[in-house]
Structure formats: C-alpha cells, structure tokens
Length: 334
Length: 116
Image (cartoon, rainbow over all chains, first blue to last red; front, side, top):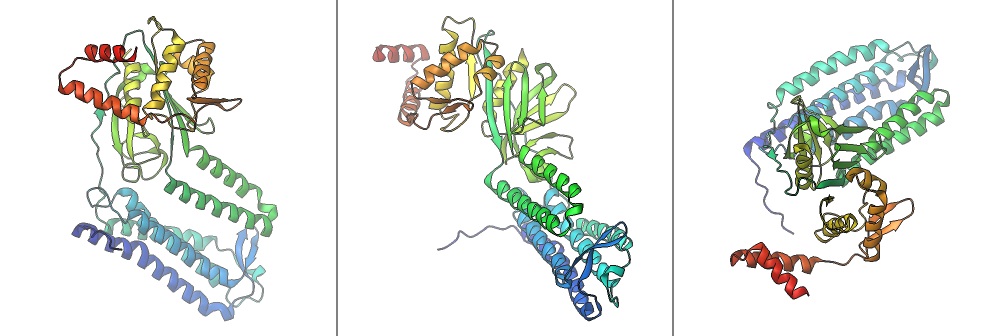
C-alpha cells in the first residue's frame, strides 16, 4: 500500500517540532525526572504511603508505585492528546489558539502532577508510619504558580495563534406568499470522533468514582454529585434540537435544558458561515469565542449565524444550515 | 426539514403539510429513522390545528413515508421507497428545459399533460 505523499509546509514542520518538544518531550522529561527521584526515595518511605489528605491529616493511602506511576501516565496521555489534537494545524498551516492551549496545558499538568506527587513523598521520607505525614497543602500551592509560569513560557514559545475568519454569506428569505408559514426543524449532534473522546473521559470519571466508592465511601457524596453533574452536562450538550418558526429560533438540548431562544424581532440578520470548532471556539459544545460570538458548536462546517439587534452573534452548526438560515431569514423579515 | 403552508391557498392545509414532508423525504433532507416533530409541536409551530397535522401524518403513514409510534411520534420510515431515479430524472428534465429555454409554465404544462 502506498500512501499519497503529504505536502507539509515548512511552517507546519516547524510548528510540529515545537509541539513535540514543548507539549510532549519537556513534560515527559519533567515527569520522568520526578519519577526517578521518587524511585530513589523508596527505601526511606513508609509502606503504604499517604496519598490523600483530609482536613485533619492523611486519610487515603496507596502503594508507592501508584504515586510514582500515576503522574507519569497522566502526563503521557495528555501529551499524546495535545500532540494528536494540534498535529494538523490550522487551515493556513499555523497553530490555532485551541491547539496552543492544549500544548501549554500539557506543560502545566506535567509540572503540577509531578511536583505534587514528589512533594507528597518528600515529606514522608524517614517516617515509620504514613499516618504521621505532615500536611502538603503548601507544596500544592507552590506547584501551581510554577506550573502557570512554565505554561505561559510554553505559550510564548509557540507561534502566534492563527485566527480563522470565515466570511458569512447572508441568507435570503424563501420566496412565497406573504401569508405562508414556515417550520424548520433538525437535530444537530457531535461527530463520532467527539463521542469517542467524551465516552472515554466519562468512563474514566466513572472508574474514578467507583474507586472512590470502594476505598473511601464516607467521602463519596461530593465527588458523586460533581461526577453526575458533569455526566449530565456532557450528555445534554452532545445533541440539540433546532426549531425555526414564526416564534424565531429555538435551540434545545436533548435533555430539554439548556435552551436558547431568539425571537424574530431580536434578529438583525441571518447568514451561513463555515465554522472551525477548534480554531474559532477552542472545542465543542456550548461555546464562547474570544471575538464575542457564542453558540452551539458541534461539528466542523456549515452553521447558521444570527446577528442580534444588539450586535451579538449566535451560531449553531448543522448539516442543512443553508435551508435553516433561509427559513430564519423568512421569519425575521416579517 | 422545511415545512411550508399557506392558509390563504386553496389547497387544504393537510395536503400542503403532507406535500412539504413528502418533498423532504424525496430530496433526502430527512432520511430513514429521522424523527419528525410531534403533531402538537408542529401544530403550535405553524399555528394550525393539531388534527390537521395528524391527518397529514396519517396520510403519509398510509403512503409508507413515515411510521407513527405511540409515545415516539413520527419517524421517517425505513420502508420509504428510494426516489433517487425520480429525483435524478427531474434534475435532468429541468436542465434540458433550461438548455432549450423552455419556461417553467410550459414545462409544468408538459408534465401535467404526460401525467394525466
């Protein structure tokens, strides 16, 4: 099998090198160095070691191996994700701001995880029993600004973000008698790629909750509530029902909430735009872009863009955006 | 899916509704398994009586375009015929008419004559 030769611009090659070095190599070197140092401390550490702290001291314990391996594993997974997400670059070969955030976050995550894990073991060196481990709040607080500064450096080392500006094409009203009434409805949902990523993340969350339920059942309530909230939020934003009629535009999530309604008299103009979720909105779901636009961004490609009377823009991605936009323009005209 | 009705038209509303939905199935704006708005939803959206929508839905069900299921509303039927060749034929006929500068009125008259 022969693959077609990929035509990669020198700029993209340069950016990919930066992504690998800043988003993968440096974070992994930091995590590996931390793992190596922690491994050297093993003879001096109690077994098991304290791995979780409550308000009154350590309240969770685990093997030293998991404290060493977990930050390394998480760094590896996130670095791979950051590289994978930003590999293709923007439409003009540059890096989109969403890509830059992923790479910088990889650096941030590596440092916070490594420093916190190493710090939590450092204070337990020479202890007979992990129950006497001192509090580590200070280490976690110290790790945060260091990681933030390094992430900022990572951001500055990367090329300036490429912003995508697509040209909106104003939609014309559908021809017809003045007495005609129109109804347009469609379901818009995320693509299979996003579903897989969300599914994997939710599975990880469910496993984390199950582990918490077994190891520390008395402190399950808060994580369980947060977990269920996150799951509900994720599920509700994956699929939306769009209805356009004489009452305006209504966009409703699969669960019925949240919903967004724009009445016809609030509409200044309607257009069809080509949307790049990562580049313009930094991801998928109910999104706000740095340029002030908000919207339901579920797929790459066509979207309805509504400009309200107050100048604010709202967009919804969908496969039949042209027809939807024309319907909304018809309604708004009246 | 786009539904257009004109209460001022002489054609009965339920016929207009059914024609709109039929067209959406034929031009593949909606495909097998897609959910149509519930009769209540569509009625309030268009400002028509719910029974008008139900009548249109029943007609479409009898023609095999949609399935009506209790509690699940209307779904585009998997048994709906493929209208691909019809759609292709129409595209070809319209292109041919345009090439020969045959007006829309003449073309529809020709089709009507052939159909009857």
